[in-house]
Every structure is written in C-alpha cells, then in structure tokens.
Length: 336
Image (cartoon, rainbow, N blue to C red):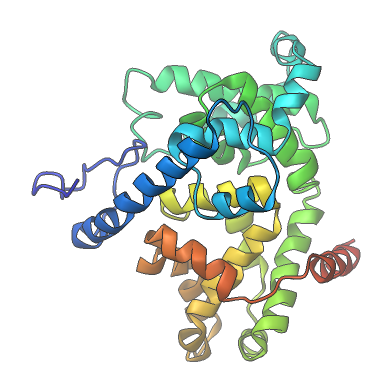
C-alpha cells in the first residue's frame, strides 16, 4: 500500500476519493498506512466473530470498547444505523422520505442548498469531475431537501452538506442517511443547526469552560490574548470535523459519536488543545494563537487515527456527563 513516485504527486487519491493537499507528506502517510493496516485487519476479524448472524449492533460495554477501537468499513452503515436507532425510525415511518421528496421546498432554502452542492468536498473525485458526481450531488440535494422539510426550524445550515456528503460516501443509501441525519439533528446535536445557532454558540463556550477545568493555564493565557472560543470551535463542531481532519480520523470520531454522543466532539477538541499546550502558552498575540489552534487538526498526531483516538480518552482524563451537562446548560443560559 505504499505510494509510488507517481502517487506522491498532488493527484494522489485515497480510498474515499479525497485528493491529497499541497502539503501532503507521502513518507508520513506511508508510515501511517503501514501501522494502521494490521489494526484494521485485527478489528475486522473481531467484528466478524462478534457479528456472526447478527442484524444489529447492540449497546453494551463490549461494543462500546469495539466502537472506540474502530468500526470496520464493511460494518459502519449497519452499526451507525442501529446504534442510533435510525433503523427503527425508518421502519416506523417507511414512506416519509419519499413523501417529503415529492413536496416543494421554500425557494430561498432550495437556493441555499443548491449553492452548496458544488462546494461540498471539492477535493473529492466522487463529488467532482467523475461519472458519479452528478448522482452524488442529486442524492445530496435530496437528503438536504427532505431534512429541511422535516425540520423547518433548521431549514438548511452550512455544515449539513459536509456531514451529509461524508455519510453518502460511507452509508450510500439516501433514505438511511436521511434518518441518520434526523437522529443527529434532534438527538445527538439538538438545536445545533437551528437558525439562531444558540446551541452551537453554547457548545463553543462549553469548550472554553472545559479548557478552564482541564487546562487552566491555557484558558487564562487565551483569555489574556482575547481569543474568542467561536474562532476555535465553530467549524470543528458544525461539520463534526468532517472538513478539517484526516478522513480516517473523522470516521473514527463518528464511530464514537454515534455510540456515545456529542461529548466526543469536546474530547477531540480538548485533546487538540492539550497536545499543543506549550506552543499555545508561547503565543504572543491573538492571531498567532488562533492560527496555531486552527492548524492543530492537521498535525501528524491527527493522521495516526488509532493512537489519536486512544489519546482522546486518556489525555483529558475523566469526563463526567453530569458536569458536562451542567456546564452546557450554564453556557446556553448565558447565550440566551
């Protein structure tokens, strides 16, 4: 699986259709692939044993551990659908997606969706300049349209296109993705995508409170520099890291989000900040600090997804759901 000289050029495309960026480091990537391939093989074998004759992934301590260690590609659609109960919602309302698809959409919302179709993963060959790009963009439109009709308080919000687009690359089924999106919008990330965006703003402030709790020196330093948390967490949270981190790492994050909920997004954020603690404390001004933190998603540690996911459960330490919920409520009340 190592890259040839030809593959080291900018045109190199990964297994999901994403072209490598200008700063792509083939040596680093080959090191990652060499280390990660045996992990994938072991995880696949263990899932094969666990899922023999199974039609859904159950919630239990063992499966929580399995999800944290990564869901194999061949089981992701099934796991995400059943762990979130999106499959049950589909069975309860089997005709809803098609009924919504037949309805008309508010022209302003439709225009907003269509404007973003071509902006969704422009570095992915499946969404651009390929035989199936038109089909994928049609599917993307269909899901975003039905989401808007089902959730008029949301309509369409930038960020939803990247979440939906990545689900299309993995799950591939429009109707299943529609129901996964319903769970995300109404249960896992409730009110994140509402037009007032209060919950998203509160989540950014929550990150600040978690940094204050876990890394008080960093919090004080960033406060002194006048760095607002909105400049750090907005893009991370609104697309669930889909457009900012290496794809394998994003998928591993989503494996945990679909099992454990939104606090995983905060675990990732505090880990990114913790890994760069000393460099942040050395920053002399606002722009330098913001630039450093925003670029932290591209550091080598983020590429090595297996080690990085182990870090998000070790580096921050305990993450009491009760305390997180209390802090979130406080942030939301202050935003309101």
